[in-house]
Image (cartoon, rainbow, N blue to C red; front, side, top):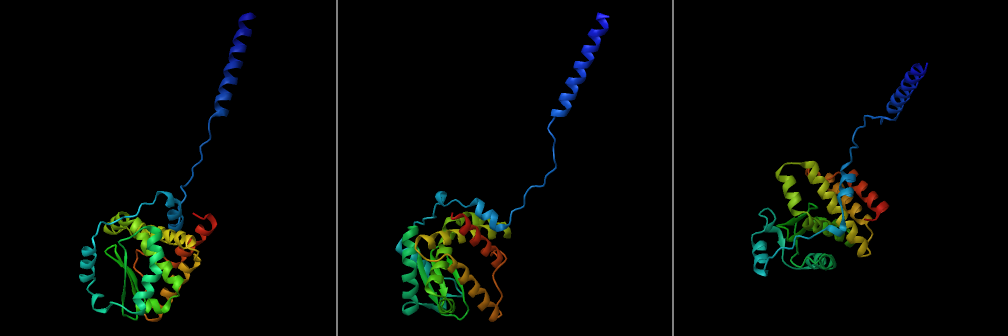
Length: 234
């Protein structure tokens, strides 16, 4: 009888132990990884405290040589002095000082197409068409975006060399975040960046010259990065 009771208790304990093991095993659910939009990806990566500007070591002679050997398609239209050059230099000055980008320069070229670009990481260049179209604060916003490129020179060059358009767009959106942060610090409405982009897109469409290259973010993405910035205040 005692032997039977012992066997019974052993079997009962084994069943209870097995039941506990089975019931306490972790349940695994199959989950799909979250896919972030380009704006969300840029916002997640952006850390203003870890930014390091690409400070070139150009001498004044180097800078003058860059101007002499300016982008061939634009060089014949460069304006040396006057109202446009003075206006752009005045608007750029506080932004250059804020980012301590002492080697940065401005350039204006006479052309009706609204165009903005940076030549050799040094000359932030505006067409007269762009300057006629934009307010002072909108011009400042685009200068701040172009300065943003100096923080991501290598990353952007790598993305373009690999023809990774998505990555290039994410980096451009991080340049937008640099601009938005700059505008806030300089007491300029961050929304001026979006209004500037909208004006450029609308005017380029009107002139039937197409929008921007595939490595440039869509207006929707830029509005999204603006909304994320306003909600999170990076």
